[in-house]
Image (tube, rainbow, N blue to C red):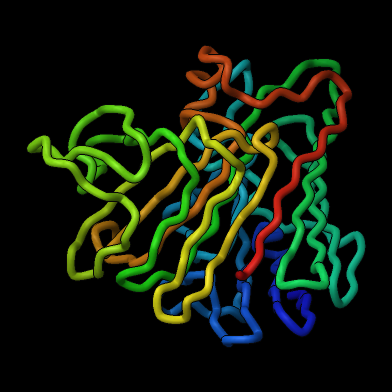
Amino acid sequence: MITLENSELQLIIRPDLGGRIDQLVDRQTSRSWLWHPPGYDSTQTRSLSVGDSFDEHWTGGWDEMFPNDGAGQFQGRDLVDHGEVWSQKWDVIESSSCHVKLAYQCHTVPVRVEKTIQLDAKPQATITYQFENTSADPIPFLLKQHCAIAIEPGDEILLPNCVVEPAFLDFSKIIGRQAKTPFPKAFAADGSEVDLRITPPASSQLQEFYYTSELAVGECGIRHARSHSTLLMQFDLTDFPYVWVFQSYGGWRDYYVLVMEPCTTLPFDLAEAYEKGTTAILKPHEIQRRSLTVSIV
């Protein structure tokens, strides 16, 4: 476990749990922004195999999905559930009170990944990824943030002008029609208009999962109604042109959580995304970098 902190933020990093940010604390309000399921023990580690089920082992925090989301065969490779980087231990290359660099060598694709997390002077952290294709073949891929945010009823989902569509209509309990609509508008099954911005209570037993595209600017976040503070992610749209938003308002496994997911790719199936020309691609022997910032405002 590695702690990064300054006067504004504290980040807990878990190299043993996929190199994830396990907690992000606003030191001005003492608010812990990242969600964990009931009974989560932050002192416990784990040992998972590449290919283990993500849902069965998910314990919240801020994971990444790479090089894919949905499992399956693609270009002769056996890609595993939600990719492999979330499940494996990362190596610590550098570490200080405000900076950490982690590295991981993938097994399902010939790619070495490095992740650097840097705390800035203001309440902001910059996360930078470096991908090195060690082969002579191009590698289509997906990189997706999987930031599990602790929410309360009445919080507000923040997205720029963009287009919304349900990821899986049979999962949706708020959106009821397969259509593309301008955020925050969508349509229920009876054709009535719904507003996607405000989080309902857990007693609603609702759940939702939608993709957004055609973002006017590269940002997304959550405004916490009670503290009047906001977790805001900002990124270049060339790095993350899409945002996926997964929500369980008590409806999925009784969890009450929102997962904000800036992503390179759409939809979840890499083969389908490749056919549509929406995957990111590592050229032969290319070193590629992508980054985003997270701030509390």
